[in-house]
Length: 129
Length: 258
Image (tube, rainbow over all chains, first blue to last red; front, side, top):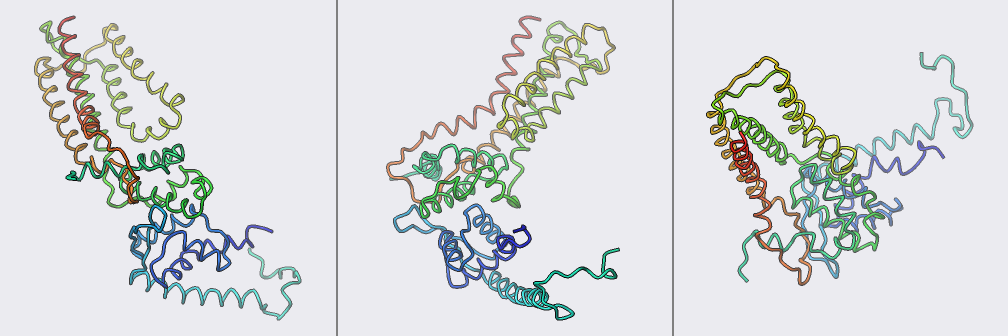
C-alpha cells in the first residue's frame, strides 16, 4: 500500500479538528484524548504527535491549560476549549463536511458513470501539456 | 515554613524528581535542546511535566512515547515563543565586548609602562576582527559544540592561539602601524568599560535567575532536598566578575614584565 492511501496520512490533516471535537465535551487531558481517539478507531496516537499539537492549540488561544493534582499520578494538564476554539471547531466541522462530501462524490462517481474499481486509461486530450 | 519565592522555585526544580532521575539521559537531551532554543526554564519544566504525566498514565518510557528527545524538543517548540527575549545574544554581545576591551586594554599596559603608544598593524587588526567574529558566533556554534565537542571544540579552541601567534608574529615583520592609540587612556578607560559591562551582565543574569530554573508544575517530590541558595548566586557572580578580574591579573603581569 502506497503512502497516498495510508489513513495515518489522512489523519494528520484532521487530527486537530478531532482533538477540538473531544474537548467540546469538557476539560480533558493528554492521555484521555489519546485514549478517546484510539477508542474512536484512529489507532494509537503517540505523545510525540499529540502534545506538540496541544501546544499549538494553546498558543493559538483555542484552548486554555491548567495543571491539576492527579489521582494517584503526579498531576494532569487539563485543556479547556475557549470561545475562539469553539468557533474554530464549528468552522472546521463545516469545512470538513463540505470537503469530505466533495471527496466522496469524486471518488464514488465518475463523469461516465463507470465503475472506478476498473482501471481506465487517461483520455489523451486531458493529459497535462 | 517561611520561604522566599526563589527558594520555593528551587525546591520545584525538575532535577529533584524521581522520574527525571530514572530517565536522566532523555531528560538531559530534551532540556539542553530547549535551553539552546532560549526557552524559559518554567516552560521547559511544563513540557517535561507533560512527558512525566503521560508516561505515568501509559507506563511507557519517554523514548517509547515521545521518540528522540532532541527531535521532540524541536517539534514542541516549532513556532518558538513570542515572549522570548534575545537573552543568549545579549549576554554574548556583552561578553564579546568585554573580552575585546580586555585584549586591547591589557595590550596597552606594556607600551604604557615603557612610555610608548599602542599601535596596531593591518594583520593585528584583522586578527582582532576574526577573534571578535568567533566570539559573536558562539550562540550559533553552541548547539554543534555541545553535540560534537571534539569536532567543533578543538578547531575553535585552536583558533585563539593561532590568532594570538599570528598577531605576535606580524609585530616582528615591521609592518606599518595603521592605528596608534594613547596607551594609558586606553588601559584605564577600557578597564572602566569592562567594569560597567560586567555590572550590566550581572543585572541581566540576576534578572533571569528564576527563569533559569527548570521548575516542574507537578506536585513536589517527597523529601526533595533543597539545593543551597548560594549556588545560583555564584552562577551569576562568577561569569560577571571573571573578565574584570582577568583584566587586573593580565595588566599586573604585563606591567611587571614590561
